[in-house]
View 1 (tube, rainbow, N blue to C red):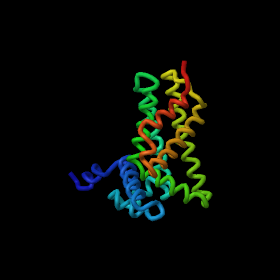
View 2 (tube, rainbow, N blue to C red):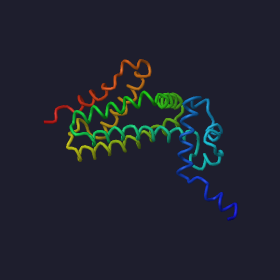
View 3 (tube, rainbow, N blue to C red):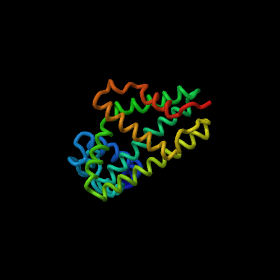
View 4 (cartoon, one colour):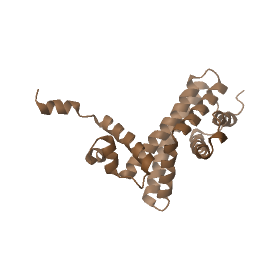
Length: 203
């Protein structure tokens, strides 16, 4: 078989390349910070060329925003899945909260990345607008998941899905900061207790 054909078949797909870049970016940004990192360093960590990174992400800002959006959606949709799988409302909400708190403990780098990018965007209108749009997209996706969850389980929502999505993001981020400062202040069951309070009486 010609060498070129073998190489073509072993070349990673676009989705595989994107995944490698995102994983490498998380490692590099988490260790060095966003401002202290470069696309070259991300490419080296991924074992790819800078061209491969730029073929998937328009800029370092685009890469950072994509990374944060993916993580936020994965965390919150994962907690919603816990509600769907549980047998009763209380255990469902407590399980969802525990998932979020455990994720905070192992994902401390994510919150440092978000905090740093928020600070970097403060005096940069383009960055600020990019962050705003990506967060809106992530919240919209979570809001749709909340609406589906309500329909499937009969759980009455204390707020419209879009507003509840904002509250969940805010709680997740705020508790993550407090947990980073003092882990003992945020026990595993705290988020679930707050979710139960938000849900209110269902009878």
